[in-house]
Length: 463
Image (cartoon, rainbow, N blue to C red; front, side):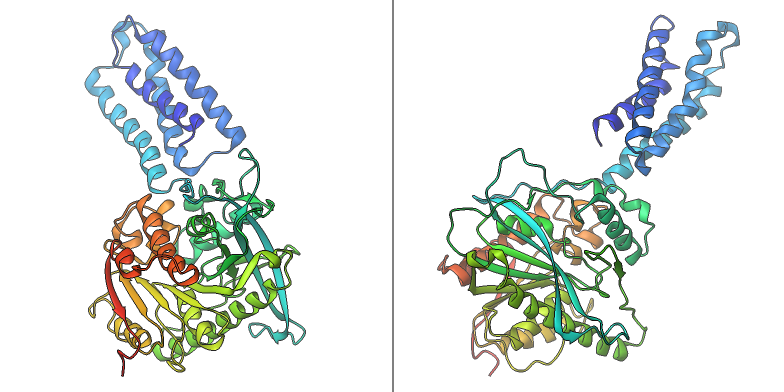
């Protein structure tokens, strides 16, 4: 909660408490509480009220007549305490709802990147002239993707920070409402998310030092968006990588194009598992092609001179992880793979040539009988050493920014906590990237083991 919200909350609480104070102090406390509550509420009306403050305002409004009436009535007419108690309890319950819901659905606060570089960000849009858009019937419509880059940067420490979820607050609100709708929640529950600022500086100049930076491409989960792993991307970029995350139009929850059009998700489950698997395979293949196209377009970007396209990891969450695995089989420009809790889709051949890290929650045959056998098959077929790291206490959304702004319910975001979730996922990813792209730690297995339960798949294990 910000300062105005806290002052409103304190003013409302003081109005409830004032009724029960000794007569000598009651007038001063009541008048002061009323002034703080009124002025703070007016200021919130001007700056914008989050839905979590509505019960606080209601509680203060209901409490105010009971707080001020003893100041204008004689003592003989003052309500008996046992008559006033239910109203006070009701007001306290209303007011308490405010901080509880603000804690459950907060404005996300992003962890400070731990690397030696400041982080810049920019948004690009590319159209592939060789691929028609299969989600529309217009033959003139070609596949377009929106990419966001996070990169090592130079810039003043006090430079304005990037908006979360979009280039503007309007775009961020559009995306937040689409994300809420995608999981069946009313949009107002996420009204605090677009208020967040990240640590990256928009369009900051690239860092002078550091030479050429390895590249990490990222595909979000089904109905996810390019910014869904911002904390992860900023942490990795601060250690000298360029992270490129994609929006996949008609699959991502909402994609705002440069011309102002908004494209929402058109990928809908049918309820038939066989048909849904076929559709998911098709959508995964489109995403894989988007990732390869993005890598090609990066070669023509003004930043290209600072990109080491001989060291490129392809990564993704959920369906994005499946797309990363498929893209690596098809495109050998990718030199490493990270799958963040994604079920592998598409053909199992050819085998993966690239070293692969699969980060997963604890999966059992009871929770998903297909996941582990399929993932194990992919990893054991590989021509390089592959790793599966099971992170204790993780859930599917642990591998996104979800823990920063969703209710801390273990089945939704895991039990690692808002600070620990992004730290663990980014640290394990960095250990792998540093080892395979920079020939860093000679004991990658030891480094990964510190974050969870590790299983190593050596070449030939599947034969």
